[in-house]
Length: 198
Image 1: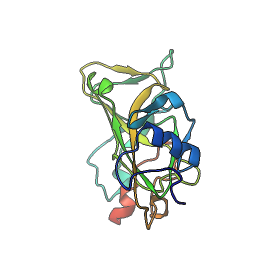
Image 2 (image 1 turned 45 degrees about the horizontal axis):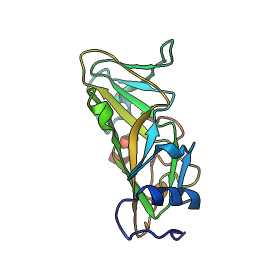
Image 3 (image 1 turned 90 degrees about the horizontal axis):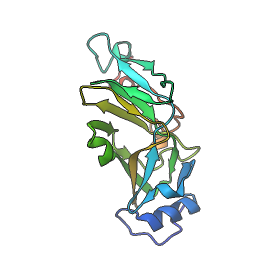
Image 4 (image 1 turned 180 degrees about the vertical axis):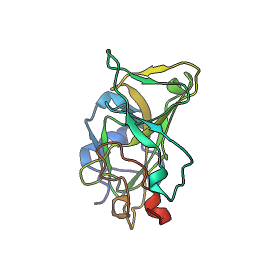
């Protein structure tokens, strides 16, 4: 589907273009909160589930049986997510994202969290066609670098999605094998599928 708004051949979409992309269906975000649109990105919020990565020994990326276990983390009495020092937590975005074949994205944590010693990272690239059929969550890796626990609030802004106009993808992300384009929840690593041993 061709772009339906005047967009540059390359470069970052600014706030006006992000809103137009959403109205045209090139970008789907569910739920969509207009106040989260920023000058050159849209903020995403922390979802309501989280999992700690717990390993019991050496991890062989080609052997799924050695992978860390995903242990559910329950919220505290006030609904907050506690991330312990050095802990690695996987959590989804509240929003489900869908990109057309003409858009690509980059996800990054915000400086507000970084200034508190919290890393919010992802394999930052969001490929053209990600979640394009029904939308998909982005799984975030959250790490506490402090010496004390940090309490996070589900539903609060936690990262930014920058969007780029592109010339279109010959093979959209959702058609690649072992992809995460239809995930509605946190999913474990599928790296073993690419390395060749199961």
